[in-house]
Length: 195
Length: 338
Image: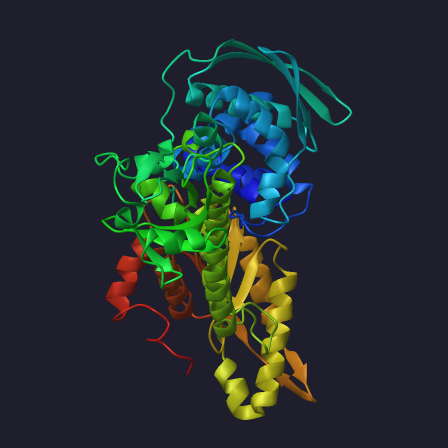
């Protein structure tokens, strides 16, 4: 698994629960190091072990932890760059949803060895969508739920999300758009480069 | 005009005289205070290349070639342009784009996605610039850390080559890691007794043999999770993670002293040494630093030596008071083997 993903997990735990909890989680997961390097590759089996360890240390279901991670990824000031990159996907929430199909390719443009799970949007009606997420690690769909929930707020849209199941390495999220201009949303300034 | 405003929001339509008849919405946004319509195009823009062109006729003749233009007043944004004959008699259309200056232009003029045609790759380019900068920054940090680690690795070999034990640097590293993790650990300072006599009477080869034997014995008498380090000529430190109390370490210390006190044969001669041990406990809950715990172990070691060698002592505060009465400063450098 790419270091960026493991590093994101590390930042999530450290920023949300403190460095102590992170160290505890790495030890619980039997890692002999505590720092992930964003630009190195790690064994694939490390990540699920780590996620189980975090869920154990925090004493919360893994699905909850993963949804919180999704929320963190697009709302915490320390990872503002990611939210900005996602906002480039579209001017409205619906455009953003459609841009998710391209997300793995966009990610690869920037970091050529970063393989994000494939995502496919199916629109059943102008207000009802299904998001089919490839799920190499159990619970990827929940991370996506957290991201979508927060990005809907970011765009000022009101959307109902439901994790409608997983199987065969696929997780499905149902998205129902109640209102596209529900609130003002967060400003997005193209030129304000996040550092 | 409406079609052009959507397809090419940075276009400008010029009349026969070179005056602006219409400016696309994004282009006009670059100068919100001053309407472009009615002004001469070459007054608004300075034509950088091709250089020779100063008149509208010459500009019209350059139709289809790439124009490098720059706004005459600040911010002097550079743009690329392409002129073609327009729809009306004598009219020209110039389409403009930011080219490489787009990153600055977007922040200078607070442009948004809506200011670019949907087919324009500007948004993708901005995305790439940001994504690449973020990725480069991560790579740069990694390179800096790797460089630091490489220098550190060159400076520090972690192994004592004679005995294969850890060296002082490795010991510092292991202790720092236990402190980071908040692990409680026991610390034993082990000094060999009468080692100098072996070296002096039987030579360095015998001394080296003794040190190697000592190292093997200490490794055999400790757990895999313990760290045995040689930190000086005949000085050793043993770190015992999760040691509960000084008493718990006593068994290990006793066995080490017992085995080291047995004569060590070397090329027909017999080397006789022993060991003095002082131990202390690092407790992450207490305020004590590692350096202070090391010093405690030193005080205990001194008591062992003063008590007649070949014995071990657990640190207690009372010990420190006694030691201060007995001798000047504590620490190993004070007392050397006779």
